[in-house]
Structures are given as structure tokens and as C-alpha cells.
Image (cartoon, rainbow, N blue to C red; front, side, top):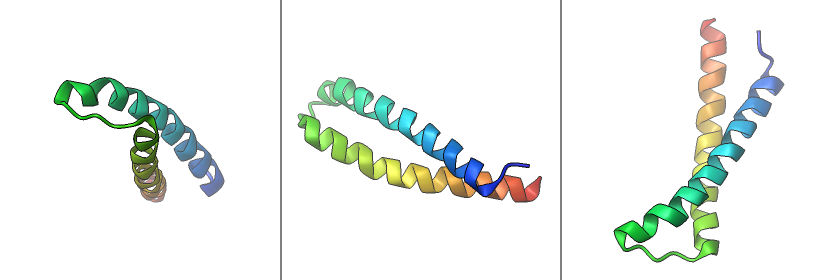
Length: 68
């Protein structure tokens, strides 16, 4: 059984990797749609999604651990 701390560490690791991929994807994809966003804005947009993703990942992990 995974502890709450392990769940949090896993969720944080997952979100960090996701954040880096999201920012890179935004930098590549946004211009295809005519969106011109500064690097700082890309980082800020990514940060908002990181917070949401971290909460989602942690909550789902805890839910699945409870069901297990």
C-alpha cells in the first residue's frame, strides 16, 4: 500500500515532467494557431495547469488507494 507521502511524491514528479512537456508543447503548438505568447506567459499558463494537475493526480491516487 502506498503512503500519502509516497502518493504526493509520485504526483509531484508526474506534474513536473508534465509541466516541462506542456511548456515545450505550448511553445511549439501555439504559433500554429496564430497565438503569440511570451516565454513568461507560457511559464505562467503552465504553472496554472500544474496546480490543477497536482491536485487532480493526488486526489485520484488517494481515491484508488482507498478502493484497493
